[in-house]
Length: 197
Image (cartoon, rainbow, N blue to C red):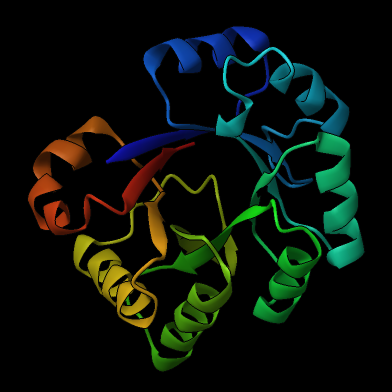
């Protein structure tokens, strides 16, 4: 199991995450986020990292042009998207083979046929999927947990469609959930990562 810590805004927190051994560190460049960091500040922060490959640019671009501009300004190759369609993501990846793309998918209490199709469609074009609790069509910063059975169902859908897809679980992650509900996840621990935001 790997750990991603998201929402870093200053050098002290970044150094703490690196020293603690975080596998990935996210920098949020989304207007609606309270933890938003401008791309020039992200570039400055990541320039001091011991391993810049651990840095992830978290964005919710309006379109592909917007996405490409933010990616270029940040200088990062790991991106986490909270928008764009599978076709748009495929085109972005075709134009930049160095990119590693994570797509956030909002899930609440259950997975209906439309959500199943969404998971499968993004599993086709992304390197990672991040399952996060969804409220009113938005993910990120809710602090709510996806029910374990629902998260496992989402993981099964993704892995059965693309066995190479890597998975993140986000939303209200804490040590209690890992301790109390760790057993159901052991089967997926080779491909599951947790994100603390």
